[in-house]
Image (cartoon, rainbow, N blue to C red):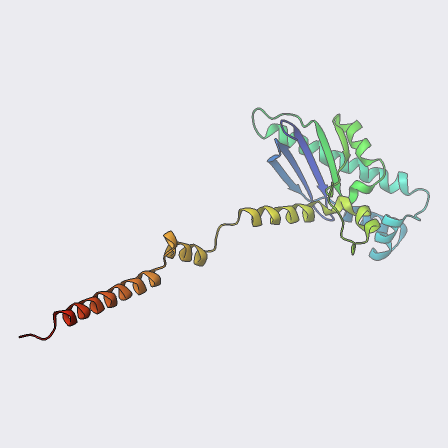
Length: 219
């Protein structure tokens, strides 16, 4: 919000983006190699699953009882360390840097139960799962349940969609349109001015002929 400093961490499949916004403007961003694919690969190695099976199990559950302690908790620790490291880089990147008031956790990894709370307790800053959809209305053709389930992973898509609206609202005329507008300045195009001059010349010639006829034949 206005006069607030908010951090947004977007965990993607293979990379993560850490951004800080001040007064709704991005003042810092950092990309680094870390994402949910690492968790999928660890599930594959630990339980001998294929990539497809591991990805499905990660979303739908059904993994052995030691999954939480042996695989998931270490991954959450890594997530927390990445957020903490990014905060340190941000605070050291310039003078007058303010610590964020809140961290919004986005991306597919944000759906891990309790991950925002763990980050908040470890980092010492309030954190919550981000919802990029906000007050957006879903199309009747969209699968509402699936969209809501994957909402945290739609941060970039939502941002691009909103940006397209801004671009349409502030678009400048294309070069051809600008040239046409210049040609038709004051509501009269060059072609119209030429036609006007030709019409005026014909009018003068016709008027001159009428005046000669009025004079009659020479004596």
